[in-house]
Image (tube, rainbow, N blue to C red; front, side, top):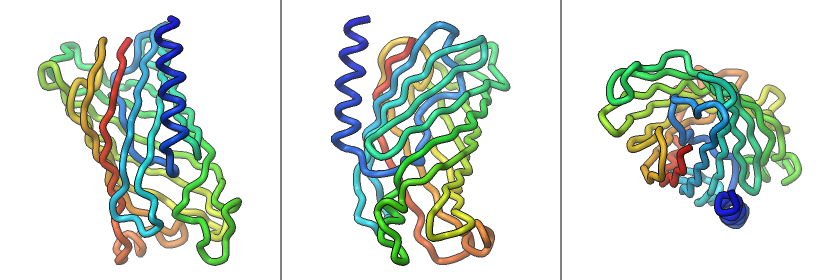
Length: 220
């Protein structure tokens, strides 16, 4: 327990030191943490395709099992904090094959530096709440899992009365679930859409944001 507490403190320090803004990528498996157990993920990442100059982020995620197919997660970095409830809807009877499926509705509060200074907004205006619905699909391939997570995230943005939608998804591959320590790659791709005209802005010329990451995971 002392070793885990020290590890969490070290990861929290790294997250605070290296964070840049709200993080879209999803780093976990649709398989929930067993009741009474804990999972810790540390995920440094970079941003590509952003015009705000932000280039690096670091997230710490802690998940605690609360039931057979449910766990609670908290996620934080310097500029945001998120809580979610993950519910596993489908669980393959054999963890080495088949498909797992979960949803994890989330709510959070933080700052996205993409909106600082836009249309006369101040840095304070970039701090707002957000909600999201990721759908986690895990394809079991022996010891490993391919996880594809489409996600819709709504952000309240001060200078846009209707806010924005972030629409995209994350792909992860490796030992994303199970016990023990693992390291695996993740990449997320998404686009910001004007909530007043999401279809028009989806077809528009705006750049896609890309967030590759390397996840360090300590399983239960």
